[in-house]
Image 1 (cartoon, rainbow, N blue to C red):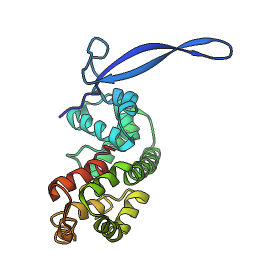
Image 2 (image 1 turned 180 degrees about the vertical axis):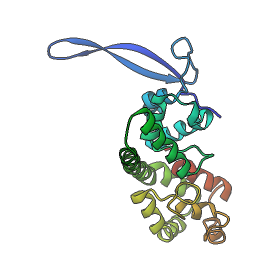
Image 3 (image 1 turned 120 degrees about the horizontal axis):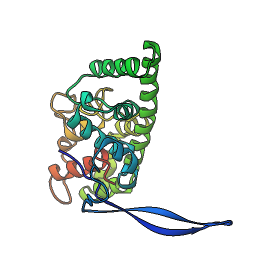
Length: 236
């Protein structure tokens, strides 16, 4: 499955400064891809360059990059694309972390001339930057107006307050440390396991649906889907 950024065209506008006037390019997006301007809008490099204009946060851009990485695979990447994959601390879904890190270290040593220690240090730096960015994204999602619109749409004020109380620790870990859940990272169980009553987790029979709230509208499938659209997908 691929993603298209959409039609990207350049218009001209004039910015007046004290000493001169300069034309500034403005990027606008529509639902149609204009291949006369860009014929590879879904590339890894273009997602990095233009993703911030149409994605809500870092993690949403990273998700798009992961799709492209899975489509191409590490062995099919250019060196510049491999640098981006390392920068965003990405891993092919089909590979475990040890295998992916070995591929990255090998590339840095053979193509960049790094020592093994330098290559490993680069991965540590990449993870540190990634983790700070994912925390920032999760904090935005967890504090977004859209999240509380979804909650208020489905729950009474009393039930909403109860939900906030019983998930306080999980939400705090989500927003402060980006701990999402067993299917969304390597930090173990988290908020998503509770919200989705993940099979095999400690919340399988004690998750959101099992709380027994009477919903104002819809059903638990739609309620959970709308919550995850904000918290996992970053649509807020």
